[in-house]
Image (tube, rainbow, N blue to C red; front, side, top):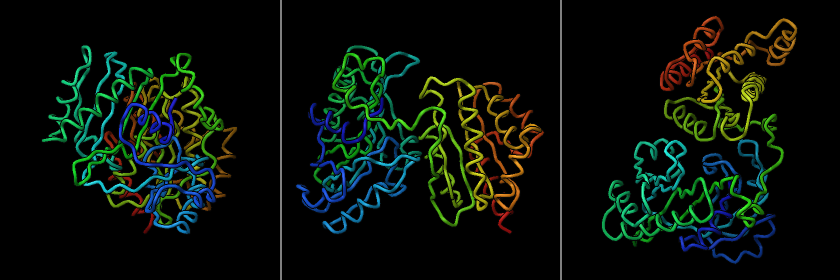
Length: 393
């Protein structure tokens, strides 16, 4: 079970992790009674990450601007989810942003602390600089200081950073969590640190031992496993590229790489991680077909990148789902024809990058379809940009 940012920060506050003064906003008019001095940040409280990239975080300096921004954020879907509450928070001038997390590694069955000296919204940069330390014995401050040194931290920052790591670890253990994450952990000009954002994932199997956490479960019930978001997010109104990925982190990283390559992204769609729910293989494949149909309905979409990393679902099953979209069986060909008519143009060109079991079988299957299969993501994006430019001309 994931917690919203304001819920995570309530737990941070309980264990002494520094957080900014804040106030929850359930409607724009609540800002008239704001107790926090301006300027402030208004943050959409949804379960998806990187809200700032799509307009879910706004900085304002007075009540009039705050109310206008709140109206906008409340009506902004992020990955198809609308916020029910906003977090109004004091603004913080960070000179440096770090990434810090404690996570349960299921493979080795041990907690691992992760840290990057380059935190913030650029996911790929943070990953490139990521350091880790495995907690293989009883926890001691030694583990925290070891991570700080591996990250290149110096001076008094090592002590304050290590203190945060220790508090995060004991919160992780005490509440039976799968993940505690601070991104970014801000450092100001005085060397003071502040948890500027927070993410917590509770182990569902442990909720019976933590009724207070179970009571926080206000996940939107519309996200049942057989239903995709009601609407698509538009990034660049002039874009002609769409992407379909499984998992929020993979989606955001793919968006970053397309932007860095000069591509103009129109739509993105996250069909959900196969490990997030107890899905049957058919579920992910069905969502893939539904997602491709949603993206293809917009005739402005010229190319679609399918970037799927699967473990439980073999790649050949994913390939078969893509094939059904491109070459539906005879009884459903009328649906494909209707889609082409509604677009007023042929189907978008598909570029596919898959990772998972039976990959060679998947490639052989897709070789007989119009899809272009690439071995790595960089090559897939390069071909995506080339194909888009060809279709523009």
